[in-house]
Picture 1 (cartoon, helix red, strand yellow):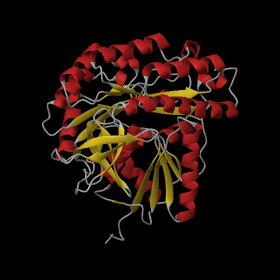
Picture 2: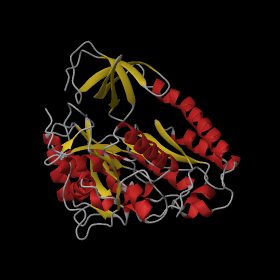
Picture 3: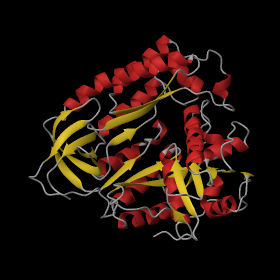
Picture 4: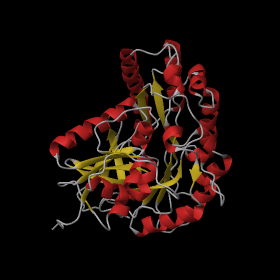
Length: 436
């Protein structure tokens, strides 16, 4: 039974995996003194994103919906959206308190201020704003993987992105701190860790490299899988690929943002590579790891993207053969250079190209998935569904499957692949091999 004297706090998360990690961190910091719950909250924290207009609209719609559901609750935005408001690049009038990313390590002060009637946009706290706190997340009874943030901030300043503005300069956590947190997560029972950051390619602590970190993590006996979240092409060094070749625990799946397959658009985005350089990185990975799989992010409708540039992106997708694809319609963001570029693409063209690109990708994905039919794959169990279970293979292919056994989230099962849907494999539990 809940304690009526304790302030009840709800947390809603939008955006990237780093935000998901930060929400776990805030939960950990709040739980000793507050009750973190979605039931009748006194304070609602929106860990909100500002990268796209759609992300902001979702936060705004959620704030208004929650205001109707919980009229007496105090609504707080915390994170990137609040920083954008402070910098004058956006407006958000649906919150009582706005606190930037620097407040996430001091979230208890934000909750106390909001619950006592405080209002408005908070200045950043003085002194050390990051500290060495880390989330001690709930184990596999709730989730099968844990995100492990090793880096924050960005120094690239892509012309369409606010990450540099709202996340600040690149900062890397020391290997020793990351390894300590990894130990706690593994002791909690997580079989898989996912290394994440705003730009993993800029991970450069004083006591090692990304290759050194994955080497040391893979020596942890309780770890069953280690995966990288999104990483830019420059981060895929020969040393890192050698580490992947050494360790079976490393998932040979690489989510490498392409954004566009056209050199002119890539230059206008200030991505720092052309299409040939990007594809050479894919080839280098395949020489070391022939069975690697790939995912990517694409922006359609960037200023100046004409039919030829869009066709170049389709060709690049065909060349790589991605197993997962995130497509975003370009969203002009005030304060970015791209928002001032000429030849802005009409909204209806962006919508059409987004649909065409996804259809084009799905038509090629079928052949990749068909190659797995008849094989047995080790699947990490993630979720129970009404009609069965869901999980991912070692190389991050989505699998839905059935079983007659009693299983648990976080276990790894041998699943015999018997078919596929549009973007997922279908399988059945292979009883001949024991559950791990």
